[in-house]
Length: 480
Image (cartoon, rainbow, N blue to C red; front, side, top):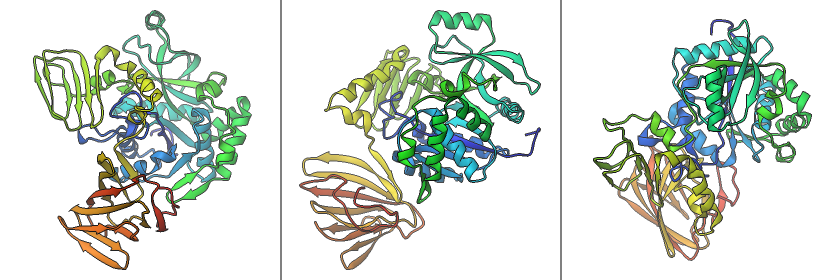
């Protein structure tokens, strides 16, 4: 950064409902965490983008409790340190979320300038992008709240727009107005007129200035978030915002709460490579493709197929004589859609949520992350289920027992230390141990590589709440 030596604290918004890239993304595993083709997730790409630029301090992550261990694990995989993981006790839109993060940054003596960015956007971290950050920082230092406008390359109807006004000395422009998502005719007219950019949902400003402006227009929000931060509690590596204070905040976006009213709003129009990956078709646009325009992730065979997006976790998919399709196969669901209709996947998810027999398809994901590692569900049946447990080096599960099930553990890789009542077993690959119903037991990874264990459960009840914890390194009670 050429204008100042001050550091910028990134605030990464990391919530999400997991509807747009269903069935791969779910409520429990939204799109920012997907690692297609064993590549980095969008969240990890955002972390790396920040870590590569010396203007940034360590990032603050704002999320909810459901994603806390997943965030910690993906940050660990990326070898990127975090300045804090703030846990929202309830969804209250972007104005309270950003307000709480800004108040937290100020309370901890962090950098005054903050850069707010979503975790699920794909951005080319090139010189054009870095120049836009530099202009935004100079503008923010001049008592402005800065938003980033993406130079449109088509009359998109899925984005809000920003109309630019007069030029500022920093290279930014005054915000003249915000425009809601337009219909196709209006979008075409705006592009022909010029001076409009897509609203990216990224912001850069002085944290105190933002809170001052938020208090001008939404004083109730500021009162709630400041109290939520002041009464927050530390839980392992996480900061839990006070629930009683935070839930009293109005539910409103930052655009409606501040940017559409303040006279301090500025925009940096930027011709950067950017996508919010809002549909399978937009993901297809961002992916590498074969000579026939097909973007492939997973085991796929193609014959006379063109311009398809095909993703498969395990099943082998064969396409013959088809074009412009989106096909996504997971262990428990398959999506087939025309490319042009892929934005309607969210409507499919809405229908799935309405029926009790399909709710889990919209909400649950087979892999669940815990502070010690996590587990993947492999097979479920009547009175039995099979899971793959993975335990991070140096971590251990709680000392526990079950009232309704027994377990059989087989070590796949690594070395396991297993406690069963008064006996401690050390198990290598291909060795196993039986955990009788009611036995006090614990699994630990004392080695230096990831421990993987196949767990076979059998019994009359197999829910995750059938755990009685006797000792736990992570301060958890009975609930899993």
